[in-house]
Image (cartoon, rainbow, N blue to C red; front, side, top):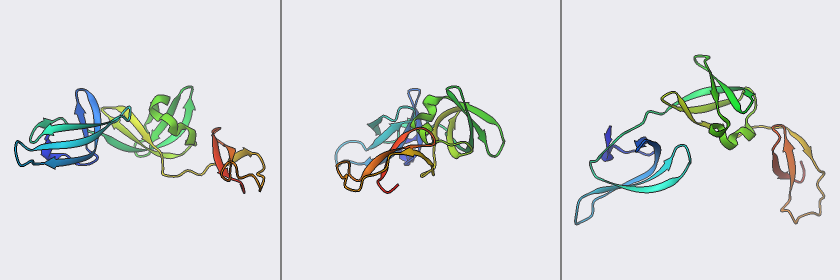
Length: 166
């Protein structure tokens, strides 16, 4: 448990059984009336952002979210198998938890997995990944209607936009 005076950016709270991450907070002391804390929070699982106001000094429950370095091993049906790089324990994570990041995930890629009470919450990919382009049409120099880009398929199977010279 912590009070609203202890809130910090990035702190994870357990409010009504749901996990919320504090994006920003502001302690407000109006000239008239009691002080309060205005926060902007993101729900960990859905990504929904809400603004919530707490009275100053109110106790809120904090959640322990552990971030572990893991290595992606392989895809098993709809699930993804990751290995903890320190203990070598394997963990199976559902496709819903991995999310859109699965489109950029290669075997043996190092990622961060946020875990709360043994349950994986989300997977953080590196800021950039290097993928090989498997197919693209040749670009025509005079074609500027598409902003100088063309579609290309990468080794994971998704289509992205690349410059004409590639």
